[in-house]
Image (cartoon, rainbow, N blue to C red; front, side, top):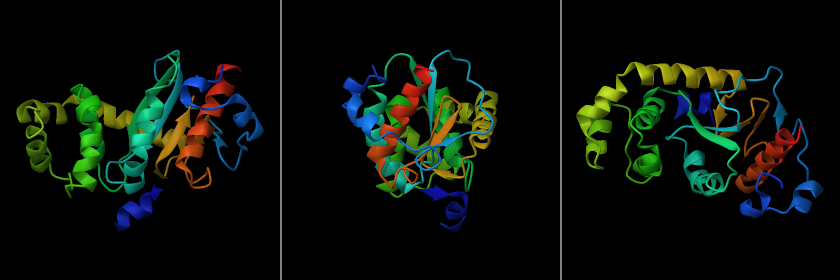
Length: 212
């Protein structure tokens, strides 16, 4: 898990579909205060009636990059009444946050989300300067003029403010982390350092919310 300081320095929620057994979750129910925290002040819903899951991340975080393929596979199997959203943090700099939200504004997250991770962690891209980001995007079929217009748009600026407000409301100071229904926060570190276990914890929390 990467923190602000580290950046500065360097049935059950579709259990059958998720490959989880109800009995297994029941036998190993996560313990509040250890594998997840209940927020003292609930976070308002983001204009949806579905049960919300948010994943806090940064493209430059190596733990996020390693975890992401597993998260994507899990996300695609979530039931229809669950809303999933990525929330980019602004730790260290705002460039990676703005990059993700610009892709979202352009409807390109689905196509390029994993490619951006690869750009940082396999190609050695820093993605801190707009010129470099725009050129990289152009090489992947994104019109640089349209990209830079979206980058500077009011919509992306507003989305950055909203993302920061959600990060602060959940009390997130490191990534990767998850927020569930505006009520709970968990992370691989809290789940014993296990990426697989934290997804079980999120699944468990979703079930609690859906049947509360």
